[in-house]
Structure formats: structure tokens, C-alpha cells
Image (cartoon, rainbow, N blue to C red; front, side):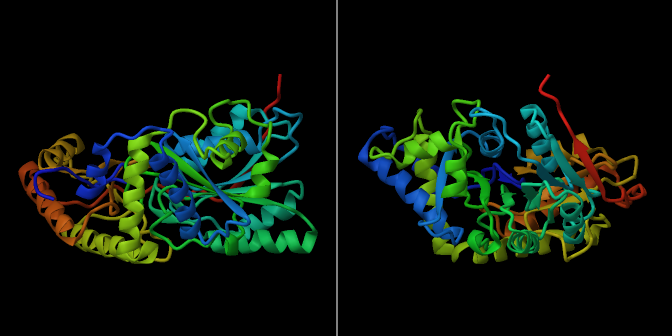
Length: 405
């Protein structure tokens, strides 16, 4: 990888030469090649998710991953065909859960929405979710972030899905389960049918190692059909997009990102060659082990130390309290050496983040660690110990009601 940037970020990320080379050929958006590529991508994503084609569809949506999430929110909870009486419960332990709350707030749902909020240093508690469902029997949907890249925590969607399926079976309900798997899909083996996921969202520039340009939603066909006519957005209408892709022409309603699709198709082939999500996840975990061991050896402290909730996607490192440590200089020094890291996103403490995904391997992290050590010496930093972390916030349930007026 010498001579080009190593992206130690949660996406966009470092891609292979063969994926980038796939971008160099032009294709017509309505050509047989492009239609075949779209068909192949949709089918392969179903296979990766263990989603039977008789029950699930893949909907490709132009734009970033957030476009895909908002497409689900606006289509599933939209009121285009009359009043929508759904009451969603959002499980929040980071910035991306809050982002979904903002989407719901703007929809001005008649019943509002509930958010079950946890400290950013904690995973979602399944027991707390169970209690919230008991206290609020009108809840129709549960929404969860799988890999919360604010911190690197992995929430246990298997146990949450099991809970929802049990509640549905015992109480005759049909609570839908939506998962934002933006930075986990492709690096974790997710069986959407077994877990009972109704909507799962990710994007082209994460663990499948494509480039930015589209998101994708794997959803139950009956749930997609329920969305018909609900979206107030033309472009983000999930059901209309799916109908276009399923039409005889098999095309996007509006101009597709042709180059990005071809590159993604190549990335899917490379994922299969590597051994699928389990093998790729193992490489990412090895990357993280190399990184963490090196950082700890220098005296850095991680924000999440509990190995049972740490993912292998991104790691949050607490900023050293040594006054000689200047993050702007640190970031620029690494960037000059073709190592791009990520600023922190914590509200209470200063931090930075380092991703361990993409076309990166052990040698890349050994190189990064050597440059971090060089930079610390140049700044004259003698200790990487952080400031004290503020006390944790207890779990709390919030009910946000936004009137239509």
C-alpha cells in the first residue's frame, strides 16, 4: 500500500486496486451489463444476509448510508396515505441512534417516538428493552444500531431480535425490528431471518469494501409493501424504488451510480474469495488486536475496555492529558505519512478514533503505530494518560411527542 493513503476510518475506507480499476469503465445505465450487475448485487446481498428470496428483497438507494436509513424511516413511518399510528422505540447509545431520533422528530408522528438512552460507554441492555416494551404496550417498532461507530460498541441484535420475536409470539403482536448495520454488515455474520429483522441498512463503502455512492436495504417483502404510498419523498420512497428494481426492466427509477455499482460487484467477489463475513471479520479483529496492543504499549487508554462489547470495526482512544499533545498536529503528521485517522465524537470527553476495516492488514497497523510513536516524540509527549472520565449516565426512557401543528 505504499504510495497511497491508508484510511484508518469507518468509511470511506481503503479499497483494492481491482475495485478501483473497476471504476475506469463507463457503462450505460440501461445496458444489459448494468441491469445484470444490479440483479447480481441484489441477489448476493440476500445471500450474505441469509435472507430467503421468497421473503426478502434488496433495495438499492442512491446516496450515503444515511439516505438508506432515512428512506426506511420516511417510508415505514410516513403519513402519505393517511395517519400513521405507529410508535417506534429507538435504542440509543451513540450519535447514530440520535440521528435516527432526529429523522423521526422531523416526521412529526402523531404518537411521537420513544428513545431508550444508555451511556455511550455501555451496550444496549436487553433487559431494559424488555422493561420498556412492558411499560409501553403500544410500541410497534424497535430500532437499533448494531455497530455504534461513535465508540466502537457492538449491540447484541441477536438477543434483541429474540426478545421481539418472543413478545410477538406471546402477545400476538407484530413489532417490527429495524437494524442500522452500516458499519457491521459484511464483517459480522448476520442472519436476518433467524434474528427476525424486518429492515436492515448498510452502504457500499463499508465492510464489503466498495466506494461511496449508494446504500442498500434488505427488507421483508410484506413490510416493503406496507410502505406503499406513505413516503412524502419522491427520491427516498422505499416501495417505489423496489417496484422499479423489480420491474421487467430491472432498473433504477432515476440515474444509478453506474461506476460505483460495478466496483461494488467486484468487491462482492473479493469478499467471497476472502471467505465471506466471518473470514473478513477475523482479519479486522486481528488488525484491531495489533492496534490496541501497540497503543496500550505507548500508554494510551481506550474508551471501551470491556472485551465483551468491543467491536472490531473502530476503536475510540482517549486524548492524552499531556499539554504537549496537540491533536491537530497529530492528525496532520499522520496524514503527511499517508495515515488518515478519525476525530472523536464523544460528548463528554475528548478522543479520537481509528478504524480497522477496509483493505488493511497487520503491516499497515505496524506502520501506523511507528508513525504515532514518531509523532509523540516530535511533540515531546511524555505521558499518554487521559483526563478522568466523567461519571456514567443511567439508562433512561424518553418519550418525544411532536405535534403536527
